[in-house]
Image (cartoon, rainbow, N blue to C red):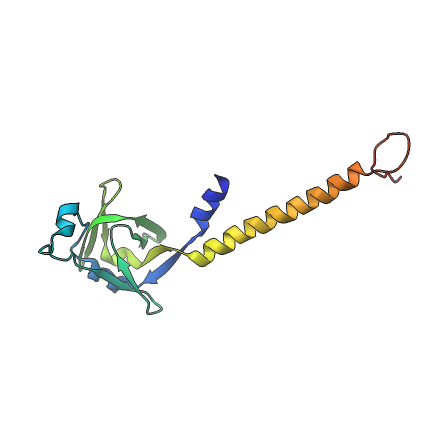
Length: 166
C-alpha cells in the first residue's frame, strides 16, 4: 500500500501550456455516450481538444485530463488542479465545472499566469519503483550479513557475539 502511494505521487509530469492555449478548451463538454450510441454509425464524432505545450508537443484533453492553473492573486501564487466535465473560456474569464465534485471554478484570465496538463509518466514510475526496489534489496543484503555474522559467532562461553572494545 505504501509503495502504491509513492508511485501515484511521484509518477506524473506537468506539461506547461501557455495561457493562450486555454482558449482551445472553450466549449469542452464531457462526453456522455451510451453503448448503443457508440455502436450507431450515424452518431456524430465528439470534438477533439488538443493543447500544445511549451516544448511543442501536442496533448489531447478529455474528461480524464488533469488541468493545472497557475494563478497569481494579490502577490500570492496558487495552483488549481482538477479534472473538468465542462470548460468555458472567455477573454476575461475561465469557468470550469469539476468532474468529481461538480464545483464551479471561476478564475479571471488576468490572474492565470500559465496552465499545465498533469500526465502519468512511465519513466518516473520505473525510476521510482526501481529506486524503492534497490533500497529494499540493499536493506535485505545488510540484514542478511548482520544476521549471518551474529549467528556464526565463535568465542566461548555463550556470551554475545559482538566484540566490545574499551
